Length: 144
Image 1 (cartoon, one colour):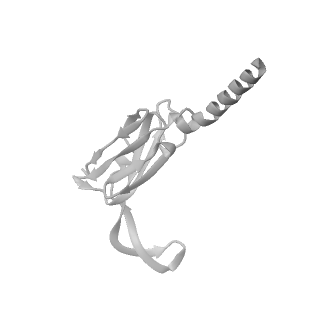
Image 2: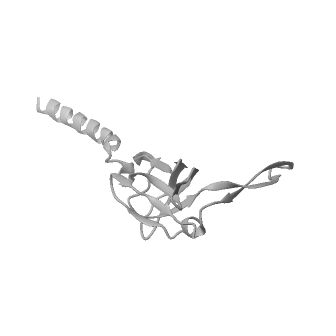
Image 3: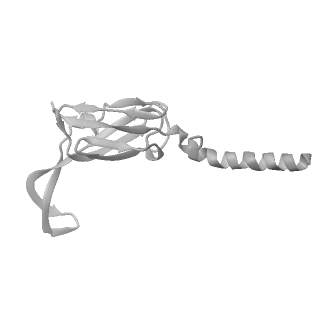
């Protein structure tokens, strides 16, 4: 009888351990959900990309998401790692010019240029401390 109880306890414990990763105790427990708003000179960024890079002793892969009508949301499963992260924001826009397409130089396409200044992307000074759980991060960017 004691052997049956021990076996049942072991099976129950094993089942609990297997389900814990899905409840936030697994490998992704270092990740957090982030959402917020990105504006440039007070206007919502129509579309773009936001990327989080662990920094200042924080480790893990970079991750990101899309910006649509000034809003972004990255669920915890794909979210940035908890701790300091450098953020890069890109928002290409049409320049009004046509340029040869790199895959077919005989075809002309709209030229895209970065609308967000380098201090927010290629030379980003944006760093945020991501906390466990849900994070609301707003980025009121200025072009000057």
